[in-house]
Image (cartoon, rainbow, N blue to C red):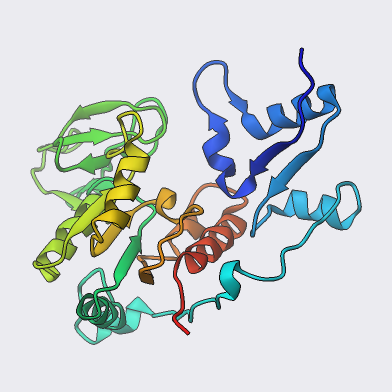
Length: 282
C-alpha cells in the first residue's frame, strides 16, 4: 500500500462523517486508524472543536495549532438574541421576530443575501390528537413522525419509515388531529408569503437527494444572487458567500432539548458556525 502524506478532517462536519449504512462507521475514527497505520499526520480542523478533542489538545495528547484571524481580516458580525415570548405577548405570531423581519426587508432593499437556518426539516415536527393527546410515532424508533407537506406523508428522520397522513386518531377515533412545530418546508412557505417578491431556495436532506445536489443549490444561490437561502445545518458549513450580510436562526434554543447529553455543546457549536457565515461590512 502506498504511503499517504497528510489526512485532513474538518471536525465541523463531524456528524456528516457518520455512516448509518451497514456497516456503520465514523469516518473520523477510520481516518485516525489510517493515519496510525501509515504513520502520517492527521489534521483535525475546526473553529468549534468538540470538548474531547479540545481537552486532548490542552493536555498535550495532540498538538494544538491556532488561527488568530479570520479570512481577509474580516470582523465577526453583531449577534442579537430575541425573546419570542415577548414577541408573542406583543401580538406577533409569526415565525420571525419583528427585528428579523425588518432586517430581511432592509437586506432585500440593499440587494444583499440572507440565510435562514432552521435545524428541522419537513413541514410540521409532530402530529397530535387534541382530544386525547395521542402523538403519532414511528413504530421502530418510538419518536414523533414529521409531516412532509409536498409528499403528503409522515416520515421518521431516524430510520426512514414512512406512512400515510393520519386523519382520525387511532386511539380515540377523534378527527381533531392537529399539526404542530415548524420545519424548513413551513418556513419556506411563510417566507414566500411575507416576501412575495423575494427569490428563495431551500437546502435540506429532502432537496439534495440527487448526485451533486449540494453544489447545484449552493452555486445557484451564489451565481443567480438568490435573495434568501433556507435550510438546515448543511447551509452553515464552511461556505463563503460575500453577499450574505444577514443570517437568521429560527427557534435557536430548540436543539437544547434533543435527546443527546451533548446537546448544549452541539448547540454552541452550530450557533458559532452560523455566526461565522455572515460577513460584517466594514
